[in-house]
Image (cartoon, rainbow, N blue to C red; front, side):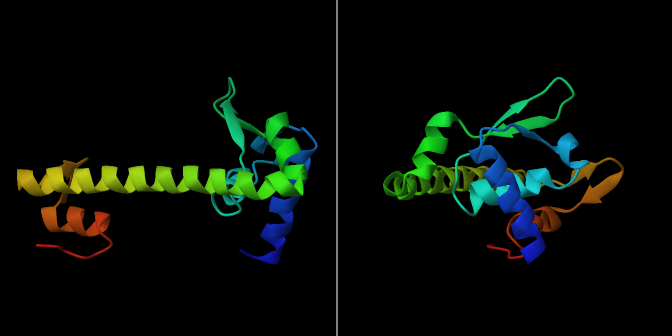
Length: 134
């Protein structure tokens, strides 16, 4: 991540620590989702999101989490909890992908996707990072 991106991400975190809700429209449709993803999935700081009527998201930190973040003794605990949640979600997503690959492998069929044919090897390769495990 570049220093410019880090600066914008830090700006978004600072605003949420002040109790503000952020929406990408407030940033001229900038990369708010990417900034929030960095805060949540790399810095391990809890951020909540709610869908709005226009199908965008408002991002915010609950006051309880803001107070924990501001307390140096509780911040490390908060990060460990958030990291555990993020890693659990990543594991669940990986297991889901493996189940999909397994189902495709067992069917031994060709998948049709909107007039494009994807062979079993191509589908498996894309889900396993190019490695075949046969």
